[in-house]
Length: 146
Length: 146
DNA sequence: CTTCGTGCAAAAAATTTGCATCCGT
DNA sequence: ACGGATGCAAATTTTTTGCACGAAG
Image 1 (cartoon, protein in one colour):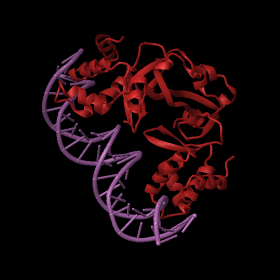
Image 2 (cartoon, chains in turn red, cyan, blue, brown):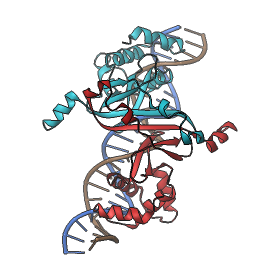
Image 3 (tube, each protein chain N blue to C red):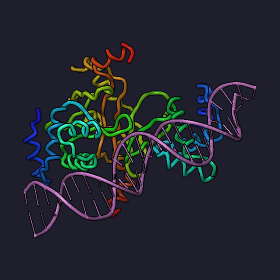
Image 4 (cartoon, chains in turn yellow, purple, red, green):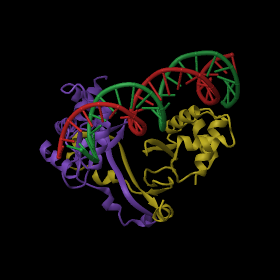
């Protein structure tokens, strides 16, 4: 479990200022830990208790959080969604396309492939590995005629 | 190697009409086999010999080709890029972020993980596994100060 | 007090839609 | 001839940028 305070600290250590907007964002992402949420969702949630926050700020701060390696970004349904990084070690996710719920997968296929045949022709800098589908809850809802 | 004619045939079999625009698109994608190209790139290329083709048509037909399982779509650099599906068997790609060149990876991590621990909580419908980086050619260009 | 962050307005980029017309089959 | 496909214009959606003001360290 990640706690907001730890993340505030990490942000500061990387030279970013801690503003109320950023606090709210981090707190919200903590609450939604285990879910990927869209920029707009995040905005809607925060606006309920901080009406003046602007969506531009959300965009800019998610970029900051990403640069600070505190969040992970994926592209689904024609938009970016963000989730808090789970401490340390590299891993991947199983993501529910309906509700955004995620489950961490402690397995990275890169290791399996690393020295594979033709890999000399490329220098790998990034990779994606995500599983998409439906969590049991959403799967049931879907069957009952969505 | 995929040949245009085979793909024309497959399109028709799935109930889509074969129009000159679609022919051009398929021919171009065949030429660029092994590369993922953007909608706009594809448009630019085709316009050289078919000036009147509209970018909306490109968008719409890429959707058609995707529904017909003839192309594969990825999201890089803030946009979708498309590549012809290589015959049969499921596989993944190594993609050059600079030039879009791809290499097929005959390995699917899904098998490694399939029956893994917590996977019962989700029904997997899709997955992504792509490696990104630079091909030797682009890597060299980059080192010589891009 | 200086630098970085914010809100706002406006632009940009990518993709989608409505509609009249056209063309494969 | 029919129904799907195209071109065009315009709208939508998502994200980015410029700039003056405000607040954190």
